[in-house]
Length: 383
View 1 (tube, rainbow, N blue to C red):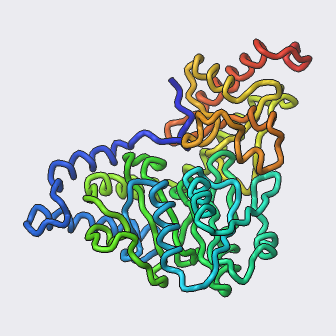
View 2 (view 1 turned 180 degrees about the horizontal axis):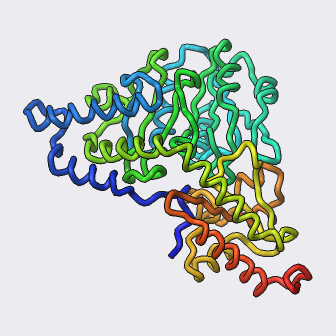
View 3 (view 1 turned 90 degrees about the horizontal axis):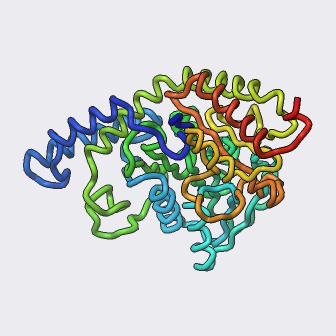
């Protein structure tokens, strides 16, 4: 099967696998244990923390290892809201956020927080001017993802951070889809917290990281917890963390080359569908978008049908965020950018990675045209 669902998860790299096996054999101790086996695990953990902080241009003390992006998002929001000294219960966000964010925001609304959802344009980009107009005296937090997981839209995080800083508004940024693809320099971003995940960058599942700005006086969510400074309880998975950081090093080093290659592959794919362009719609901007995520629709065909037909032809694609699939609801991203409910149900996503080649996308384009020819009666397909 040709795998084209890298935004849902990536296969582990050989380097990450080797590190995981080696660390599991030699650094299996509980890093809080006082004997040498535990001390060795603790030393490896802190080395990993320092390395990851270096990749982000952050202080090691600001990095907390978690079980992944979802936990990092929730723990980040909980920590910020517990730590803020500014009075108020008003939060700014969008309807584009990952389900781990949007579901938790609903919980916050039930707890009495007031949430304003800022609209986005047809390419999924939020306007800083609209955010500015929505700010109130009691606004304490903004939640804006760096890159959308369905159409790859890149939000102006630096500009949002500059807007928030003098107003003492905290900013949480979900960087799960952007980390390893875009430059993330936390000395320049100046955000309150970010979340990242291992299994999106060829590391193991079940591990990620949360950054909390050291300028904030963070209050532990779980008092008395010894692991990760009280931010997250439970024995730390040191081998998985070592594997994660190994994967980070490799993807950061090849980031620029990879993105150029993905852009070329995306352009090739679009060219291969040129003869049916009246039936195919590519979502998102060609400029403010990462090239490895390709969101699209085919007139007259539901996205789930296209996905299943592709699966039958041995292609693995998706109908959007893996954490929201199965809900039988139209894509929230599509609705947010102005698509009708009918159009939103046509959405499907192709996401490419380091094992994707030109032949894969040429074959997929041919398969999509075959699916259209077999299921649509149009003049374009009769030619």
